Image (cartoon, rainbow, N blue to C red):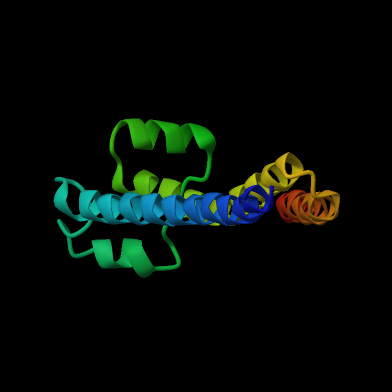
Length: 133
């Protein structure tokens, strides 16, 4: 019986660390691939001297809609792939909290379930308040 109880926390820690490792690694791959696509595809960055201004200038426009993101990822637009990688990087800790909640629920650890649900609620609230402001 003791061996079983000692394995659960280790299994939970492994699951949580896997979520973080996979999220960050996938994000890195997407950002690197998007950067390469942005510079290597004809019409992408680096083909014109004005591109430096588009990258770093204040007058540049940058679409921020989900339809732009979906269209760009489907058509392998470098900027869209980079944005997808950044969204995944930002979402990884939130996914970690959600996975932690499920893992603690499976272990029947009510205190940690309550704590992680509170953290998840605060993250959701900050997302809603950030969107409003």
